[in-house]
Image (cartoon, rainbow, N blue to C red):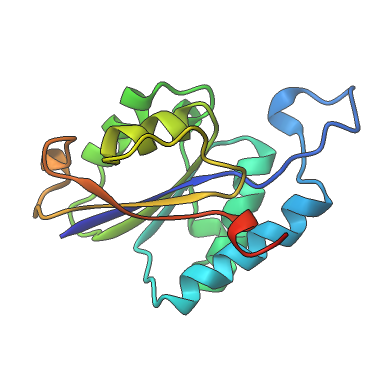
Length: 165
């Protein structure tokens, strides 16, 4: 069994217009939601073999909160430049080329890609994966190269507004 948690980065700040998009930090809501959602996964006994993040500040910072909650060292987060501004196929290629020793990976990226990926594996249409939304997709395969639309399915979908009003 192979499991991927696709995580959209937490809410980012637009307050400093001088920053390049890739440099934007999390805003206050993002700083609240990222540790909360990370703790949610920890509470579900998720054991991550690898965290893979976009190089964008907001995505990597989100990943660090999950790393801390899941007992992964910050320096062990794998940064993949191609996640930033990726097409869904780019993310699927990352999954399909993951190390076979890994059973569970978390990928931290951006919209609209994360919503597109959710819809690839969901039976029902998802209009939007909100910031810090988590989409759990499982496939009954032994090799990541076999992780495909035909055999993988979305099992769970979590996002902060389910818990905060």
